[in-house]
Length: 55
Image (cartoon, rainbow, N blue to C red; front, top):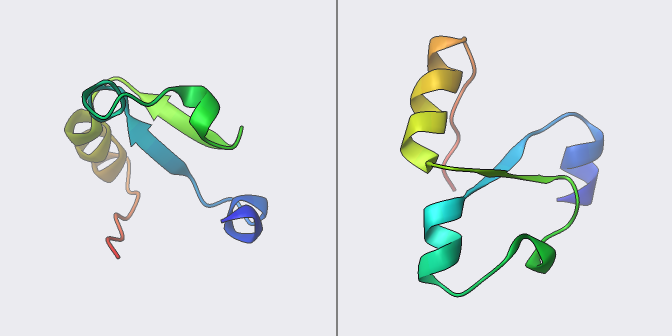
C-alpha cells in the first residue's frame, strides 16, 4: 500500500464503516483518506473520471 500511495493511488475508508467496526483514523496510515460515505465518494469520483478497482 505504501508503494501504491507513493505512486498516487488514493485509498479511502468510509467513516460509517469505521464506526460500525469500532475503528478510528489512527488505525490506518496517514495516506488513507477518511470519507463520510463510501458510496457517495465512489459516485463522485467516477463522475470525475476516476476508476474504481475492487480486489
